[in-house]
Length: 217
Length: 203
Image (tube, rainbow over all chains, first blue to last red; front, side, top):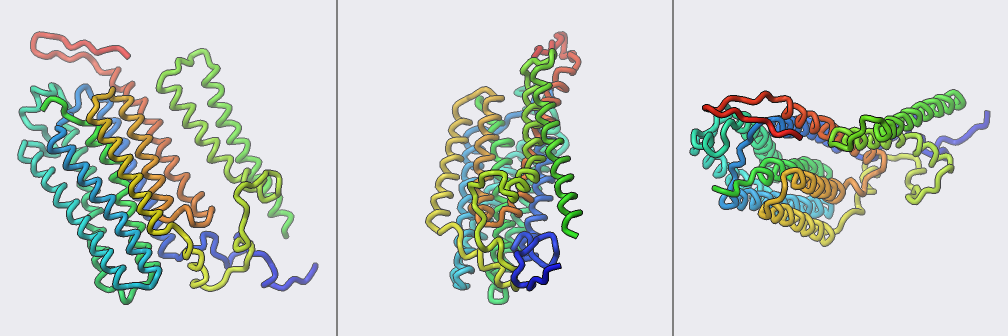
């Protein structure tokens, strides 16, 4: 057998001792988490779609004003937060920790705005009488025989998403507060989580809001 | 030692290719079968079969490419053949990526797509058409966010091939369940409301 120097060999990913993905373990861990969480949200959205299209009647209670305007603003806010997160990662890679922290705080500001707007929307529906187990009485006249699953679907999906946004805020706050101790890779990993939260909203917004516009409020 | 590995790899890729061909076969059989009605069930089954065939074909195609059997438009860079070093060197490749200006432009495109979606909601379109267009736009937005904001476009192809099939399978799940919901809708019995019987509309 020919003797070959180890450093002259091309890297063979299947021989071990190499890094097939060429990313840090934290980043790979975050990607794996994102994949599993996307399956969770996917399952919820699939169930919501199934319940909606198999039911006899389904409430479409979102008038253009205020609901669609609010939710469109929420989408704009979340997209802007993604942009500021990208700037934060870019600043962290340039080793400019001060700017990275500022952009992280801007991202958190947009995230907090999203939660406030969403809570206003939730309170509007709760005050109308919507709960996870029953529909408001007035909806029986507008959408007779409508499924009560609307409440659980709406609060379940948007509530889980809001929980992710809140957790993201805590995560980003921790990174921003102790940014001296964290590397650019850590900021990028937190950015991955934040972009995933935005990504989920890209599906929740059309499926829950835009397909349920109330054209006759 | 190398020969058994090569044989294993060939066998595995051959099996995967067979599965890919079988998936295309099922799609083709659905198309030519007597019961084909071009309804949502049939179309979704064909779509899912073709997507699965694509997923199965990835490994054989990659193997064929590495053997030089396929013309490769995405040429392998020198770094893919280098011996791996420390963790710090791992991150050296991340220096390239989208510039701030490019990311801002992507953000603008995302806003534009969102505005288009909201405009569609304002114009009262048919629900099924809305769903298809909205899902299409959402997938485009998701692809842009994953590729540029989450930096996947600039990562190694291995990582892309690990992540993207999950999302494709997720979409396949949606496509599989969706026609079943309309079937469940059609199976509902008419219900009595007051003195009138509600008759189900046929589909």
